[in-house]
Image (cartoon, rainbow, N blue to C red):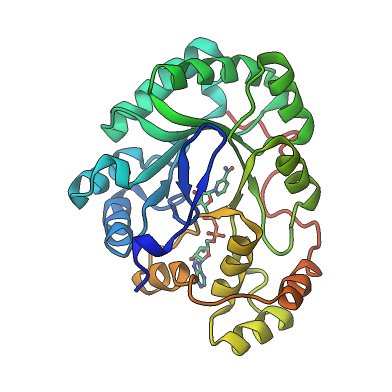
Length: 279
Ligand code: NAD
């Protein structure tokens, strides 16, 4: 079993350290979340990625409290949903999330989508800057932001997000955006890191998995880790929770990394961030 100490942490620009590996709880029904998160924490996971819109913040908080772990041993992220954007609404939204989580602060608060047609993400970011100063979130970042959205935030507020959480997997490798992040000092988080399983049957992934006696999911997660991405694959099944975090005892060669790089197809499984605005 992977122990919490085997998972590396990555320093963020605002001096917070984030565990590179965690559990995402999107689409885990609220009724199952406490049990799944409890099992993950027992199995060495120390980073949970939730959001207001997932409807399971309360259950994440309950699992943390039941774990007996100290607050500074677990990294908890939540996100500001599109209809909570705007200065005042955003400030209220984080307080409401903290109320559901029953926590005094989160480790990371993200703007879930830029929703550019609402044109409220800059005001939202100004609220984020204050919320961090008030100690209600240790770090602040964004999700699904494109380069022009990032540049606008930085130009209008002078504050660069610590993180951009984007769709990223072997069939959507986002090389351009990752380079942009590197130039700006932003850490990349990969959502849907397994790409909804679409590369599990790929010959290249299968061959690498066989060579290392690992599963296709483990090869893909190891590829993310070596790229420097932060990942939090979702599973509710105990054996997969254990399998997914067990990627710190092998190394992909440069040739294997290059072979996976060649699988990029520019293929999204989720919405286009330039237009997505579901309230
Ligand atoms: P994922 O890439 O983690 O894949 C989850 C799917 O893969 C599930 O169907 C699961 O049953 C299956 N799976 C998991 N482990 C497996 C294994 N070892 N073998 C075979 N199948 C396995 O997808 P995701 O949940 O979409 O993304 C992970 C997290 O990213 C989410 O839970 C959420 O926290 C976050 N997310 C964020 C956004 C955003 O807009 N910011 C969008 C989507 C997801």
